[in-house]
Image (tube, rainbow, N blue to C red; front, top):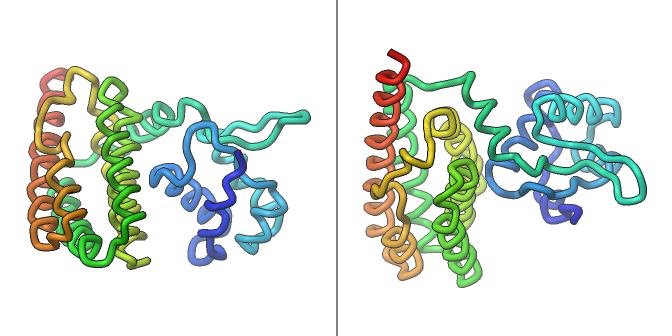
Length: 246
């Protein structure tokens, strides 16, 4: 299915060189769950028009994403450009070349406390029933992905992005997507099903309940506890990896 809702949320490319910006924009859309495995992108002419780039510039960017294994293009009557069916595993392989240090993870966690904590607070204050329903559905989807680490990571990123969207702050959404992209760098290369564990970072019930019940202070507290648990869990994964390599 062609992602028209994805298109409606796009803005013209600026800042980075156009091909680099397109690659980043589409990668972020995949990480945030706006584009999922098997989703079809709009026609190239439509996508180029929305992004206000030349068709050749868009083709170069799409070619880069195909080389990364994130997109596939098929020909024929039902052809088009699609998000790779094994997108979770592709992102995992890409992340292996960019593993964080413990210090970088600590800095990311502090950033996440500030950005994601405020997003949860405002989501509880400003979110509507549709937002809450989407957040609850995303939390349920996360719980169903326990046997597939890559899909679980994408489901987690989607949940936190939806919470940021419920805050009604475009800047917080952008920052949350960047945070989730950085989390891929530490989580995807390290985790295996046997290392998922039953930590607070693996549950969102209390956080989601606080948001839905419009307990803004409680939502922020739950988020901070959640991200600190994630920090501790990731550090344990990093130590396990170092032990294994030695």
